[in-house]
Image 1 (cartoon, rainbow, N blue to C red):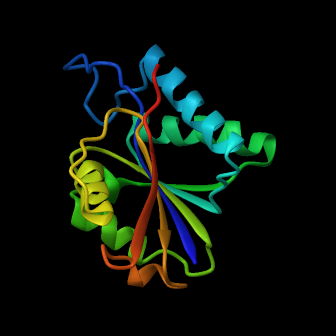
Image 2 (cartoon, rainbow, N blue to C red):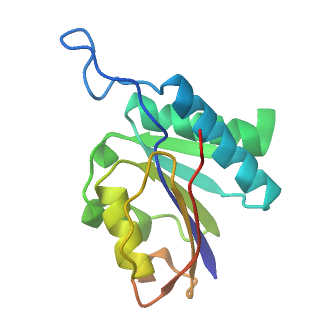
Length: 163
C-alpha cells in the first residue's frame, strides 16, 4: 500500500512585473506560516513522505523546503523540483505520480491550482477547491504508483492550514 500527499503550495506574494515573473513569486509571510503549519501537522500525525516532487517555481520549492525542515530537520527528505509541474493540469500531475519510483512507499507532490484541486477532486471523488497550503492524503490500494486512479485511491484526510 502506498501513501500520496498532494499539496497546493502555500500563499504566495504578488508578482511585481516586469521585475518578477509568476514563476519567481516566493511565499508571502502568511504562506511561510501555512507551510510550517502543514509540516507540524504532518509531523504530529507521523506523515513522512519518502520523496517530495514539486514544481520548480519559487513558491512550490519554498513550500516543500519548509515542510521538509519541519519533518526531517537537517537530515532532509529527497526533493526534486520539476519545471514540468509548473502550472501543470491534473493529467500531468497524475502522470508524474504514476511515473514515480515504485521503491517509494510514500510520495508528496507540491504543485499549483487548478491542477491540484482537480486531481484531489478526481481521486477523492469529491468537489473540493484547494485553498493555499491544502494537503490531501490518499492511500493507494496497490504497490505500484502506475495504478493510481480514482478506483485505487482512497482519500483519508484533507487538511487546510489557517495562517
